[in-house]
Image 1 (cartoon, rainbow, N blue to C red):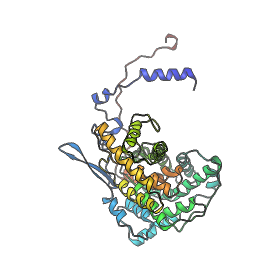
Image 2: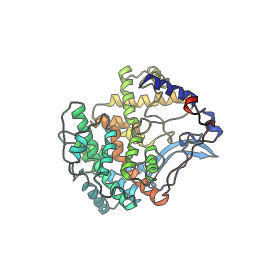
Image 3: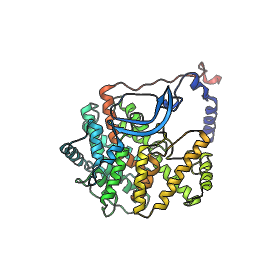
Image 4: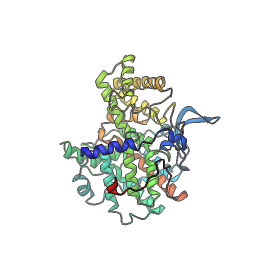
Length: 444
């Protein structure tokens, strides 16, 4: 950037500063968050609920967390999955979209519809993915979504019925978009081999992903089931999470679903949202490189405090994978993944790394409480990257995996908002600047 322009920019920041106390003076909710950290209510939903605290006498009280899909605790969904089933994600998609658990016939019909739409449009792979790789797969997914618009003859029809049709097609195609985008990057930008497989139109979404990613297309039943579980836990998180709200905001203008989903992907990319799973893995890799799998509590405390002091990792002061906007004492998704991570680690001789993650989590929670007086829990992102690593999934795909699952939540909330709200989302901002008059340029 031109140094003179940069200087003007820096000066403008200082001249136009908004003092923090003005937010309290005018009752403005920073980040749509109340003073106690709870979210400002922005809508009504019957799709999902996120419970992480309770209110007693008007005050927020920490509590153990639970996630509900259509009123059913996600822990119940996970604990009741048949051992031979690897299409639990499809069952959850049906539940989220239709409001009830499917019969065997309904699930078979729904899964067959998705399988029939796994393939990308003719010529799409060569023209829009292989020739134009991206350093970040999330940006490539955004571009691919916008290019799908060009293949849809009814792309601009915002009706509920057409939105449903389009959304199901996107859910079905997302594994191919994600995996092919990775293969293009791996080949052209990372100088690896190019491996392109046909989609598996007989398998579940989890099986399709593993088959597209692996050179020999082989995977075990246990691996497919574990990935299926991860997809279930990522499927939705209420109307207020950033990417879903972004989808609601953009779609409320009446624009096409490809544009609103592309906005959601951009939101999910950020390390304060979906990108935190990759950020947590980077952080833990840096910690392990610095102190190994240390069992020395004081040594771990020192490096945690360095992170909090913005003196280690990315100097952000954030411990990725710990803390959440809603959950306080526990994140049910993290508790499920922690148990699964232990099981996989025990089977693959990775118990040392798992035990270090667990030790780091406990000590970090204590350090945060000492310094800030708040109780935090590990969230979904802390163990998901570890599980993906043990599954052999490249780090480039940690956050895109989130996209593959969350598209169903975006679709459900998009439709619900169209049906029962159907107003453009248009909040207000309070002007706190000075009153000025225009000065002709020769007098400035």
